[in-house]
Image 1 (spheres, rainbow over the protein chains, first blue to last red):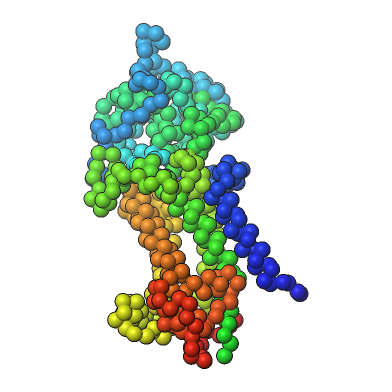
Image 2: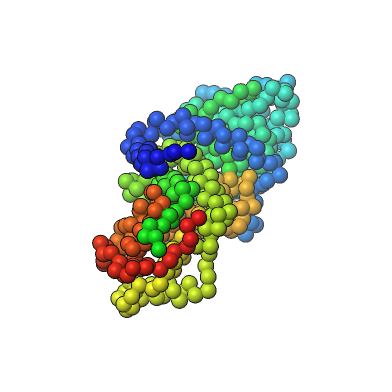
Amino acid sequence: MTIDRRRFLTVSAATLSSALFAACNSDPKSAHKLLALAERKNELLERGLFRHTEMDVVPASAKLAGNDFPKYFISERMPVWDTAANGAWRLEVSGAVRRPLSLSLDELTKLPSITQTVDHFCVEGWNARAAWTGVRVSDLARLAQITPDAHYVDFAGFDDGYHESWDLDSAMHPQTLVAYGMDGRMLGPAHGAPARVHSPVKLGYKNTKYLTKVVFLPARNGGYWSDQGYEWYGGT
Amino acid sequence: MARLVKRNHWIIRVTHWVNLVAIVLMTGSGMRIFNAYPRFARPGEHFRLYRWEGHPIPDWLTFGGWLAGARHWHFAAMWLLVANAVVYLVFLFLHGEWRDLAPRRGDLRDAVEMVKFYLFVRRDHPHQGKHNALQKGAYFAMPILGAIIVLSGLAIWKPVTLGFITALFGNYKWARFVHFVAMVLLLLLALVHVFMVFAVDPYSLRSMITGWYDRTRSPEARNARPFYHLFARATAPDPPPERAAP
């Protein structure tokens, strides 16, 4: 075989260096297709690795973040449920369910609950520990009798339309809660009162605060941050 | 004896340059991700091992634009980095090239001699094979740092699903710190490597592009220190033999 070796090498070197040059100079948008492909493949891998038996374990001696737990919302002012304008707060569980639920806070807190000290993993890179009290989303799903076409869940709140949708598997993880208590007290408005989603299996932005709706869906429904470019899956 | 030897197999050459691209993408996007929370302490806690808590890395060193963009680049380019490393390591093992990098008795002594030579304590370049003892140490350390980076990266990517890996580093915070420190060490080694290529042995660039190396231009033949005897040519008729060409 007669390969002009020198020419081959020159061409390879030129291609490689121009690719490098392009990667550094061109608008990274030209790579978006490749990045989107990687995100889809990564999600498949992440969902394949996901197990309900893999739990977040925080040592008993761990210090809780307490008052230093970061407070976050997207509204201009801290969202507080306005009973005068909207009536009493209720949590609606609906969508692909046989028995839609509408629970008052009192009814929610009377359901079987757990208290767990777990991490909160923020996409920014910090983690913070707190003791969360609430009802497992899997228990709510059982109560509402989700139908076989429920593959996703959308968690929506009254924080200026904030919502994030999840894959059902992550929502049914035993550490995924609709939490109404934090560090032994009822949830305060800075952390999503009266109730919020909390789970160590998803990054913070997937954990909708100021929760009002849990809607089981046959298809995913994006989310506040996922629609702006953050990974939709956002699993830990 | 032949003046020109084939020093680097094409697999070594290709993986070397792909590695450069992968490391630029990974460190650039990684530093952009770090800048979203440029500290290692958890909220409300202190972390004494890092002096620059709260100081972001200069923007011009980062890549990906914003946190979400940098995360997409990071989680895509990681496959390039890992796939390329696997090809390199498998080749190194199957082709026997690992012998050029594996530590041997006497390496430490040889490394001390190299330092003495660079510091003008010793007059003549120590005898060496393909690499001098300092190079060998650096090229051996790089894949090890790489393995630590990949492992700690998995630990902070999936701290619950792959929690057993996170536990190897203590916890999430420590895994993140190890990931960062190992990255800095790898970058420092790479920068020293690039400096030494241009200051001591620019002729090795050819061997990483075409594969061929002129042994009469080797640092040992030129008795070359950084910026010394850069353009000299060996006067000795027979430079010391390198490993036989494959």
